[in-house]
Image (tube, rainbow, N blue to C red; front, side):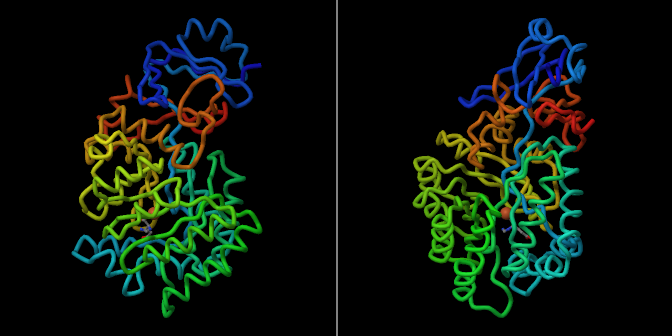
Length: 404
Ligand code: NIG
Ligand code: FE
């Protein structure tokens, strides 16, 4: 029996692997056993899958159906917030200075160490609810606010437990190398990440990816390489925070070791973009971070001009406090000058590449995951055009209505 039929959509807009946006009017999608079994005109689809015989049906009249959004870069598990730092930054304080003085990431580390595992689970579940309401159906979530083996494991266990209790598919990333703990020499801390943290994370299968903050004043290219190579040895796939404030060489490292993604890339040059493209590393641009730091955006047109498709992500964290992929898509257009169709592709198909998903995640076709959003807009262009409001109304995960 059909689990769900979504019918009479004003438009179905479907970004595909080859960069095309396929759209049609009066569209419908049928989902069975969690995967898409039919997509096409309402007439065709409902002939084989009558809504009255399905477990559930959504009348999408006047609304647009899109694949569920994939958010491939978040730090959504943490305790506390940094609203006062937001105010200080607006008055001129600098992100890197705040970190160097023991605030920023290190402040969230103190709050996260003090929190119980259950508190972290409850916090993350609340954040996932907001993400879902804005259309995210798959999200990567990083550790990295522990910086010691106990707290990194506590975070990853909390991520795992929240994932099991929430409709969003959560992809866990170990990021012990997110900052250097206070009163510790960087090299000594890298030893701990490699010798203490990684083996425990790998042994208990707590993460799929390993990430590192390759940045001036945080981890050098050599230190980042050490962490990521040790991760590969333990079965974790590399990702990297690269070229955000300074062009240290993180993109080149990502290309060299075959990382799945390189993220931020505000300072990346043409040579970096070419290297990422040739090595098949998915660039992940984070317009919310640039927006909240009032920094220049990553040069999305340069990536597109070089024929290197980018993913976009929220980077949701206490410094970039937005859970919304809708807003990220709006910023990709209004800030980074991407077209609505390329921004939506970046939030779906290419975002799935950034987390190594090859099962059709991020696109709607026969056999792909039954994850979709129904937005209260007449066509996909209206989603970023009508910014700052909640356009997403109904969210479907594996053929089940999980938000309405
Ligand atoms: O991707 N740049 C490093 N990590 C995060 C920020 C984390 C934080 O400030 O708490 C990022 O922007
Ligand atoms: Fe990040």
